[in-house]
Image 1 (cartoon, rainbow, N blue to C red):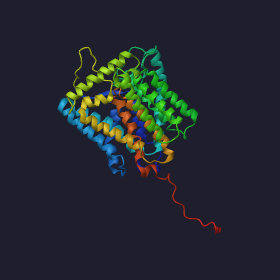
Image 2 (cartoon, rainbow, N blue to C red):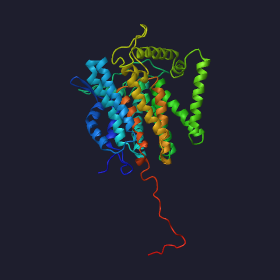
Image 3 (cartoon, rainbow, N blue to C red):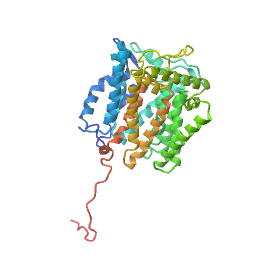
Image 4 (spheres, rainbow, N blue to C red):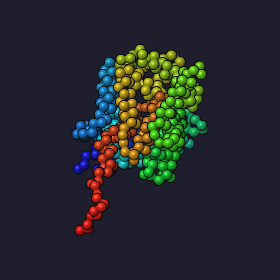
Amino acid sequence: MPDPRTCPENKELSPVVVLYLAAVALPVRYTLGPLQMTSLRTVLALVFVPLLIRYFQSSDRKAASTDLLFVGFICWAGLAFTQTSPTHALENTGVLLLELLGGYLIARTYIRCAAQLRATIKVILVIVMLSLPFAIVESLTGQPALITLIDAIPGLNSVASVSIPPRLGLERAQTLFAHPIHYGLFASTLTALVFIGTRGCWPLWCRLVGLSSGVLASFLALSSGAFLSVLLQLLLIIWAYTWAEGRTRWFVLIGLCCIAYVLVDLASNRTPVRVFFSYATFSAHNAYWRGLIFEWGMVNVWQNPTFGIGLNDWIRPPFMHSGSIDNFWLVLALRYGVPGFVLFAAAYLSGLLRVLFAPIPAENRGLRLAWVICFTGLTFTLCTVHIWTSIFSYVFFLFGAGLWMLEPAIVQSKTTPSRAPPRFTRFPRVPA
């Protein structure tokens, strides 16, 4: 039986990946003693030990440094919880281990080549297209049909229905997740992955239908943070198609962004962070509020730099009644301290940059470009939203799904033609 971590001998997508994605998209919850379980946590608890065994049996180690940094982050998070929230340390560390490392290891174990990653994109697209009718109905009526249906099943419950004022005359669709932002973020990941990642394998009309489905679903969430990911990916796609192939175009873009940052800092009476928030939100009020969250969040970070504040409430002015922090990167530093943030950011950047500069065959470069663009958009979006539970696990599952590109033995296996023996055309071969 072939090892699922080898490719291209085994190009079929594992049922474990399909089961995982179905669990991410199914908002089912139930209680197991004192534990609040979800469909995702159930699946991850069942497959976690076999995943570890398969991982340690593998000889692929090019991405091991990224893997170890994520493990180091979880270990530090567990230690930080014992100092800041000791009564909940074991439970929260276990949940973090399952949701982060579980989804990540499923991708690292079962997505080992371009064919398997494209099959994964297809499954995600099917989920988004199946959810679109529910999202459209919810946008028009405000009733999350799937969540209501699950709540009606005895012994089960679903995520809480979020009551948020309408925008643009429409209700905000949460459809499958705990918050509309999460649904929009889930759908936004299809933008580059479908349009660029499947180029050469899917016809143009199919790629356009997939792109349109992801953009529409993300729009129905009516979240500026989630739709920011779509817009950034579309802009990067246009930039990639406008310029000739090569790395120079990306260095030019980075240089232009640095120049723009300096000009904004010099010309505006606001910080570049506040200017960014003003363009990344639907309203000036939201921009101002997120600026306040960032400033007071950093005050809390520098007051608790080692272990963070854990699950405790953060210090803020009395008029800031809500404790919500709409910035994933800030929550990392605030909850786990500066060392926790550094470990997580090092794992994230090491994987992203190493894939970006990895030597891979020409036929896989479009898929790499799509994956890098997807996470470039997500990186900025996570500055304006916070993610937890299913969508948190999904984002880093998708992150792990691209790290097979670091394994030269896999990406070049059976793609580089073997050297043919010399032929002496002066003496043609005599047929038998």
